[in-house]
Image (spheres, rainbow, N blue to C red):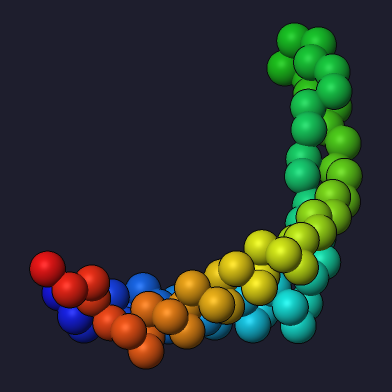
Length: 74
């Protein structure tokens, strides 16, 4: 159980660091805009998502806490 908590803490820690270092990422989305019989018209659109700095800080702090403290005491 302790190993699982530490691994989850490391994942959260890495996610927080990546979110602070690279807060914006973009991806491509293909959308079907028209379909007439067997013919389809699609449109490719680039979308950008911004990760809030507060979320990155929460991930970072909770990851550090999970790695240092380990599993909760019963």
